[in-house]
Length: 227
Image 1 (cartoon, rainbow, N blue to C red):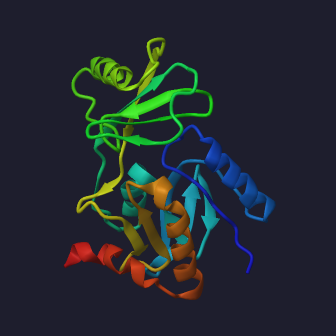
Image 2 (cartoon, rainbow, N blue to C red):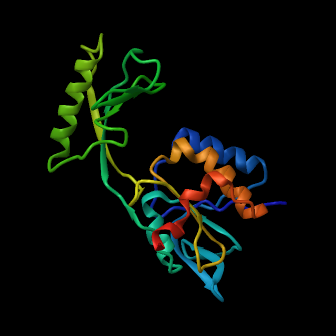
């Protein structure tokens, strides 16, 4: 069947290269891309009837809520509660530098990688550490720890830090399922979004289109929080 792909977020984020490439490929394959802020989900008779994006109502039989930290607010407009916490995580970014790393480094209290343009990006844990009351001071302290761990990093310079909010279901495990009691609403929310996106996208599409729920998703239904 033919599908119209509606991608919309609560808020606006700077697109990353991977997302941009995937969206461009989807459009080449016939998907329709609509960007904007989600105002609300609309219901008719207890089931989804559409999505209001930047004031425009888009009719829809199904909607997948995959908006990360913004997911609970969107779901709430349809009366669906997503039990998610959004702890902040601080990441430091160096100025571009010569190649020091050829993969992801996961140490006891530090993780880091190097981008294609030479930036070292690091956090104090896998999702980025608590920024504390003075995020800039926290960032500089973390950056010094990064330099101390790397050989040949004497000339490495701090550039800036970022603070992101991690969408984390309260039990720490993904939510990938339909929302009970509201037809046409599917939630896909997890901290490891980039890592799990290919598998979750495949499983969700199969469940929505063919009605086949993969056994691997059994522990991750939203209904588990009602028990």
